[in-house]
Length: 486
Image (tube, rainbow, N blue to C red):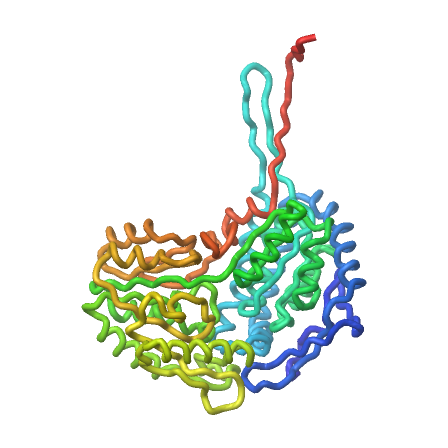
C-alpha cells in the first residue's frame, strides 16, 4: 500500500498495535482499481478478551479524572488530526475510494470537530441541586456508563470512529470500536492519535472483524452500551442482542429520505441540494434525499439543469484533487446498485442520464437520474445506497407531505422553497429526525443527528449525545429526623 503512515497492524489494544494472524484474513480493496492494498486479520476470541479487559481496567481511572483533564486530551487529539489532515484524507480515500477533494474537507475534519466539541463539553457535565423544602434536598450526579462498543459503517470510517468515541470518552467511558470490514484502516489511526494526545492506554481500542466479532462484543456482559451505524436489518439484530442484557443503545440506521422542491424554489440552489443529497460520496450516505419530489411547474427545468450540472462531474483518479466523483466502495455494492437501476427501467421509470457502469478499472457507476418515478417502484421505496436519484412529480403541499412520510424510514428530509412559512410548516410535518430547509446533508457537530421510525434510536452529536453516553444518579439528603411508623 503506497502510504507511508498506514496503520502498522490489524488491531489497536491497550495503547499499542497488536497483530494476530490466526484470525480470518480481511482483504482491503482500493475501489478505484480493485487492487488489494492491505490484509488485516479478524479478531480472535483472545484479541476480544484483551480489548475488553483493557477497557475494563482503564475506565474507572478515566472516570475519576476531572472533565477538564479528559477534555484537554480530546482537544489535543483534535489538533493532531487537523495537523495531519492530508495524510488522514489520503488514507480515507484509499479505504473508501471517495475523492481526495471530498475527504480532505469532510472526514478527518469532521472527526476533529467532534473531538474538539466534546472535549470542550467534558468539563460542563455537572449535576443538579433540587431543594425539597426545609433542610432536605436531592442532588444528581452524571456518571459514565462503563464500556461502550461502537460498530461502524463503511462510508465514513474516520468520522464515525470519532462521532462515537468523542462523546463516550468525554463522559468517562471506555470505547471498543469495530470498523466495517470493508473500510477497516482509518479507525486505527484515530486510536493512534488519541493515544499520542495523552489518552491512557485501554480507553480506545480497535478490533477488526465481520459480524460475528460485533455480535460477540455486543453480547458480552461487561459491555454497557452499544452504538451502531448501519442498515436496518443489522440494527434489528444488534438492538435485540443488546436488549438481552439491558444495554444502552444508539442506532443510526438507513433511510429513504424525501427532498421536496416547490416551484418557487431557487432552481440553482435546489439542483445543488439534490446533487449533495444524491451524488456526494457517490451516493453512499445514509441521510441522502433520494426521493426528490419536484412540483410539476418546474419539473422539466429542474431535470434539464440537473443534467447539465452532472455533466460537469469530474470522474477519475480519486487521488487527483480535480476529481469530484469517485467509485463505489466495493464490487458488491456496485452490483447491488446496478440491480436497482435495472429494476427502475423494468418498472417503467424514465432514465434521464447515467444508468451504467463506466468502462474503466474500479467500481465506477455513472451518476444516474430517473424521472416519472411513482411511489410504488422499488427505486422509490428501498434504500439503494448509490448514485441513483428518483424524481417524482407532485401537485400541492398536502399531497407531497403525505407521500413524503409514507415510508418506514425517518432519518432525514428536506424542502426547498422561498416561502419560509411553508418551509417551516413542511419541516414540522416531516416524520424525520434530521430536516433541512433550502440546504441538504449539512452535519455540524453542534446539532443532533439521528432518525425516527425504522431509521434509528437516539441521537449522535450535540449535547443530546451526552444523554446517550452517561446516566443520572439521584442522591436524597435528609438533614432533619427520619420519621418511621414504628
